[in-house]
Length: 496
Image (cartoon, rainbow, N blue to C red; front, top):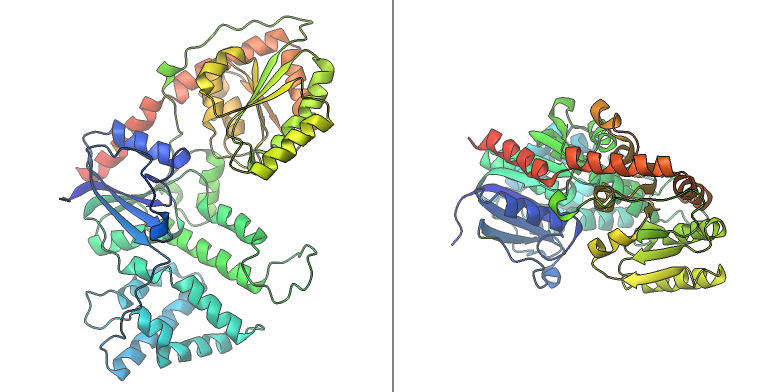
């Protein structure tokens, strides 16, 4: 039987049905804070996405509920009189125009129009099938003088608004604090929960959700573009892509404005959040951490003139990790250190075509004797064999592989994405005083990657200084116990 929880975690398509990444972070947080009673509100596309749980739920999870944003009970039209319904749609049109213009203060008024606890409210059936709804769309189409097909406008409105309305009418767990782990639909329902239950909303973003959706939408083929008659790159995005981007930006801003605290992992993300609407005094950084007791430092020694090294790449063999840039860099590295071995440690079955392309690239560059794809392996058992770790990702937040490798005393060469720069060079003045624990390179730059690897491995004093700095940095600033303590303090601040 469910009971009132202390903290309701609002999760979009992650824990407990997906493993790794944010899901692992959520599970560790719940397990660490045993005295906090958690409930889970999980947003999924539909029931088909309910899979076998990847985690055994801890005993302090007291309630779990799902919201299926692409399953809609159209129900019946509301019992309102024609005049009352018209008045509600007039209000909705007015508020929608203000929200489009950037006035997010009207969100609470929009939400109440669909509140089923009110005698006079709108239903999904009203929104999709009533004459006042049709008139509202016609009015907005004319108001904005849109140079697009009304039919395309009509269907885009339907597809974009349908996932939102159920969020206003969800049976939300009763909690003191609602903690959403992204903006988007999860952030929106977090704002609804905060308003309905007069509660506290907290937000943690590992990656900036609206930014990630913008990148996806820019490349999306499922969004119709009536102006794009060929496949040449377009300088400006279509009206419909801009529609979706604006929608996710507005949802992000709503979540920022309703959150008592906005948390992220590193400073560049914090700046993006503030630029998107988060109040500077509500925005804080809580870096991720690792269990340092599981990563014992190993004393490493390299010598001048050494030509045999073991270089590791830890990550999934998928395009976003840009394994091809790493392989191209390895060609240059092997020319300098011909006896070196390169290990690519990570699953190869997520993007099988990309993996096959990587295998062919190794053969084309005559690297088959040097490079080994290990597949999924216990990475911690491989770290003692590795002299240096390379990341060539196109996008990251705060990669744990950097913390794990540095904790073992392994220097890093990483592309300049996410928090990688401050993880290798320090964030605060105290952190920076430790020195660098690796080198940063440009994205998709195999030559610079190779040169950085060669520079570190050719300079034993630099190597050993980076090894020492990495160990000290992780133990002092990225200890998992500090992460949990920070969140416990945050919860207790609003619970008691």
